[in-house]
Length: 389
Ligand SMILES: *[C@@H]1O[C@H](CO)[C@@H](O)[C@H](O)[C@H]1NC(C)=O
Ligand SMILES: *[C@@H]1O[C@H](CO)[C@@H](O)[C@H](O)[C@H]1NC(C)=O
Ligand SMILES: *[C@@H]1O[C@H](CO)[C@@H](O)[C@H](O)[C@H]1NC(C)=O
Ligand SMILES: *[C@@H]1O[C@H](CO)[C@@H](O)[C@H](O)[C@H]1NC(C)=O
Ligand SMILES: *[C@@H]1O[C@H](CO)[C@@H](O)[C@H](O)[C@H]1NC(C)=O
Picture 1 (cartoon, rainbow, N blue to C red):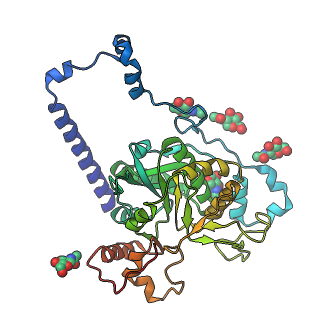
Picture 2 (cartoon, rainbow, N blue to C red; picture 1 turned 90 degrees about the horizontal axis):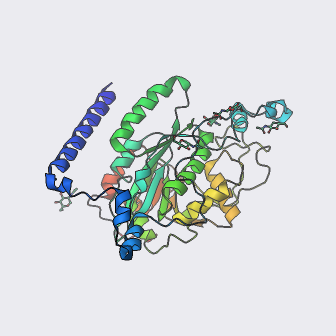
Picture 3 (cartoon, rainbow, N blue to C red; picture 1 turned 60 degrees about the vertical axis):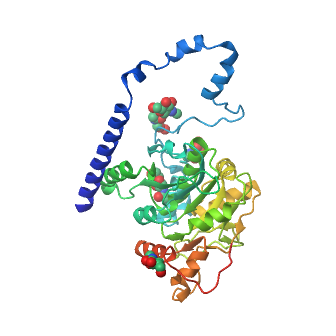
């Protein structure tokens, strides 16, 4: 109830602030300024001096590359995908666990309509876009590493953040969830949402929806960082790392696994039955906790992923898309998506000097994230400089 009130209160304040801003803006225009508006576009087209015609036209019409067939806006308007009932007659299908059955029944449904969109996030010069695909814990991220910046420094463009969401997975929660989310989005304006269930196996759908979205709305972004909601990210180090990288490079960097084997233990969250993947090892892929990629590569990934059948583990799926392109993900010591020390009780996992020297560290609760953020950005004296960059 108090959260509800707070959200309503905040949105009222926001609307008031907007109203004041608009009023102030209107008041700053004198009547003569209103009168000096240029003639309507159709007329001005006839009135321009022929010599300066191309000059002025160039400012208005941005040249569109002829080769690109990308849609102007999200082009999926209806959810009209029925279960592939052909499968239910197959004996091997009947023996599968229910969540694999659900995955396979809807595997052919690739794109869904958008419920919340923010094309304006990519206006202007966006240097780094951070996206977070989990469905919780947004507040701590907005207050720490997800904070947006107008400039990435050294003359680089803006740093922006977006959260990627689907629908509540329990039907009885959907309408309530949707209302809360719409309020939250009205305040922060940082949520992209699609009309599919937010489930573990649908994380791959989020991946391809985001890549398609990026191709339509953000084709000029320089770099993309993708992170989980339970990681610590050091944006200063990320930006430092990117400083001598070019957006045209085949850059895909993170905590890379080579020859990882599909897990065949049925009690694991990552269990994969042989019928879904029968090879012994996966192509190299970066752990989904946090990785960086160049904008140009993200666009090519969109197209290469579209040639593959969906795979239920999202980071492995991206590894498969990279393999299609022949791009090898690059391993970097500063990405610790399994914690600084794999020993959970190690004191290193609590040591701010380590966090200050890293790019991404898994995994922290929101309160731990806030506390660590304060420590790393406070008066921290480290005995020696850790060189990981
Ligand atoms: C989707 O809807 C938009 C606006 O309502 C419309 O302009 C567009 O043509 C539609 N696209 C498809 C594929 O139906
Ligand atoms: C949805 O699919 C059904 C059967 O596949 C078809 O009859 C119907 O016209 C489709 N509706 C839309 C809006 O595409
Ligand atoms: C189901 O089988 C029919 C007939 O073999 C085929 O035409 C159809 O495309 C199949 N449906 C799916 C979703 O694969
Ligand atoms: C993914 O989302 C679609 C659309 O909401 C749903 O039909 C499907 O069952 C979901 N798949 C899984 C594995 O949750
Ligand atoms: C940092 O140190 C300075 C000088 O020792 C002190 O004045 C300041 O309050 C400290 N800031 C924090 C956040 O501890």
